[in-house]
Image (cartoon, rainbow, N blue to C red; front, side):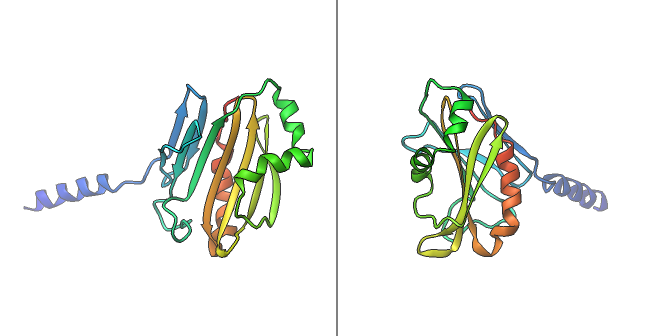
Amino acid sequence: MRFLSLAALVVAGTAAGPAAAETYDDKSIPIYVETPAGFPIRPFAMEGFTLALRIDATGNFPSRARGENYLCDILFKAVPVERTQGWINERWNDEVVASEVRRPWIAGLHVKSETPFAMGDVAGMEYVGPMRGNPSTVMMASVAVTPRGRLGMHCMLRAEQAEAALPMLRSIRATIRPPK
C-alpha cells in the first residue's frame, strides 16, 4: 500500500509541474511571439485580420480586466505597401499620419502616455491609459507598421495592477518578430 501511495505522489507531482513558455511561429505570414510560462497563446478568428492571437494569464497576476475573456490580443492586418521599413518608421514623426494609424487601435482609450518602442528595426508606438467610461480598466495598446501590414497588441488590465504589469507585457511585446 505504501508503494502505491508513493507512486501516486510521483504521478501527481509530475502532472502539476510548472507551465512551460509558449511560442507561436507562423512562417506563412511570418510572425513569431513568445510568452513566459503561464501565458498561453491561442489563435482565434477575427474578421478583417490576417492573424489574431489571444494571450491569457493562468495565474493571479496580472489579472485580466473585469468582464474580459483574455488578457491581451495580437492582431495583424495585411496591408502591403511598397515602401522600406525606414520610410515607414519615419512616418511616426508626421502627426497627421501617426494619428491616422493609431485611431482604429486606441478607440475608447483616454491616452495618458504615448511612448515609442522598437521590435528590431520596426518602430512602433505604445499608448496607455484608462478606458473612457471605465477607469477601473487600463489598456496598453502597441501599434507598429511594416511593409507587409499593421500589427497591434492590446492588453486590458485592472487599473490597480497596471503599473506593475506593464513591464511584463512589454517583455512579451519585445519577443514579437513582425512580418516584414
